[in-house]
Length: 376
Image 1 (spheres, rainbow, N blue to C red):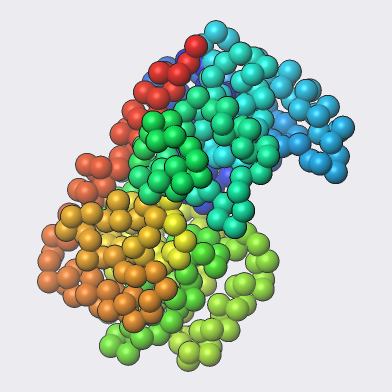
Image 2 (cartoon, one colour):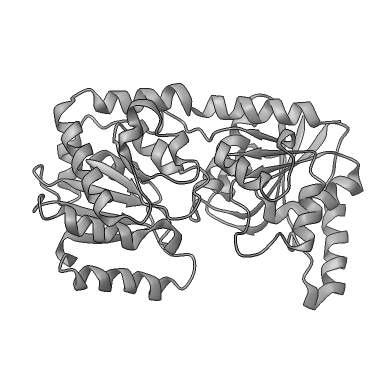
């Protein structure tokens, strides 16, 4: 099968959906499929894609700009002609934002198109005209959680058109550390300090104000604890980060909170953490950092929203907290840390849960099955 993959920016710096796409493409390549990557902006994953892609094709964009409609239409025509197809080709878009170009390409080349739903639909307004055409033209849709599927059904898409395939990770890459004390020392942290960490984008929808306020309450019983926040904002970077820093000063906890910016390799931070946190306020489609952390043997406290409860199932349900509830977050952090101290097997249980339910092979299996079913 020849898979034409659409991706805006070839980078790992934006979030989990770009990393997951890379894992999918590499996994499909290892199974003998041919990958062509169609992209808009080159990023830090570009060289890694070069290793296994048959072609990497730069295009001008994935939508028609109304203010430059003549130029956009011309670029669409030129860009679609750059892409070579075969009788077993299929278009695979990593997000609905690229669906109009994907559908246009599929129609021009007479090949099928499948779209991955890694984001919830827009909440403030309906899908734009181009996205609506593109999404309706997809042969099938892949949602990263049942809640994301429900969110898109509410937008008017048919239930039988959407399959759920959970994200998975390379469990050989994300592993517990046998030398936590040494790693902590390298980070300038003593063994007796409890580390709470957040890894992800610095966005309002991630509930970072709730995290900082909840940590402030948590500090009342854990005087030596540290909160490490790793990530960067995508919009208005200086303003939003400064507002978060100002909040730590306002609460009198600035010395206990450290902002680390984006980490190319977050694994050491997972490994030195006692708990990681994802305090999302919106319908979080999945939450890749949850499975990365648990694969490293580190429990997670996360909001009961979106697809997150589909990860923290069974014995891990007590790790869920209510979105935006500062007191509940602090109580849940206290509970999980106490649980970790009382149950020496909790780390192994976290990792086993990810190995069984959220490994990369399981994810690639699901996506490969759908793509094979819809190729011509």
